[in-house]
Image 1 (cartoon, rainbow, N blue to C red):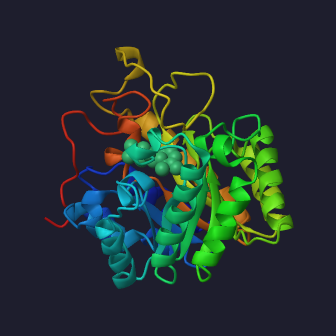
Image 2 (cartoon, rainbow, N blue to C red; image 1 turned 30 degrees about the horizontal axis):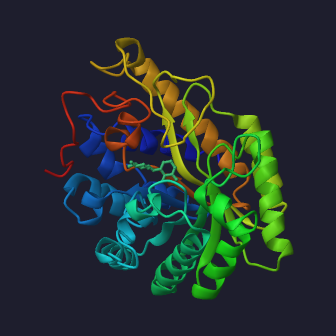
Length: 362
Ligand code: XIL
């Protein structure tokens, strides 16, 4: 097991510190991530629309070389796949299905029910009957179309508050406490050949974890299928909650379901808040203090990040029997959402004078 660490650090550094001069040589001589962990867990990446359209040549090469699982970063979210009431746009999702099939990758579809990135028409819907109709139609239409074509669905995303209670979303307000069980019941019916997951951030934290466990038990007690839980893993390199993560793996695995780390990224910039939220609607304003590495990432920070990844993967390997997939939220840190969230326009880490990686084979 120990023998894997140099590969991990090397391969992860290659991925995360894209745009270095050593990239070409490293890409040719280092075992890929999917090869290194082939007997342990799937290794995935989020893909953005340009990557799905194969317009990002350098990223495309890395994706095919390094990963055996993919998650669409945005294009299967409700606002994109159902932009108008009962009007669907499946173009990019169909393209991703074909891409995953051709490249032998497991596609985790993300996601069916989430309070964020809802179609604009949902902001005007007030009556419970319409919300229920949307809920049933969306799950049934989208999940059945892709049954047998995608490997898995994040059926419900981010339904919990930090204290473990249910988030006060439009679905909770209009459909009541049982909406999550109902979402899984509908997904099970529409997609009998697809794995069904609950996905959230901070559910490694004790209170929120207890809420997630209660939720999963409730689904199971209703006789409805849930195959796994995704811990998103948006953490900071200097503050990874290792003990909470370990305890979570144990407690979730004890429920008899797969455990996954589904949106892993370790930011290197200061946190504008005390807590470690990944709420996409939480934004903060920038300042020079909040963007300390605008002109270059110090080696010490890069090494600390690589060490944090290596420590995490040591833990993941310890529980490889319980963990089915580790997915990075972005092909490399240069194009990660963290460059624009929660503070727009920071280097986390994208050098600000350079926006994309050169093609390593060019
Ligand atoms: C993020 C995407 O990365 C961004 O491009 C988008 O603008 C907002 O959403 N939790 C999730 C993901 O489940 O879908 C979010 O992705 C990040 C937090």
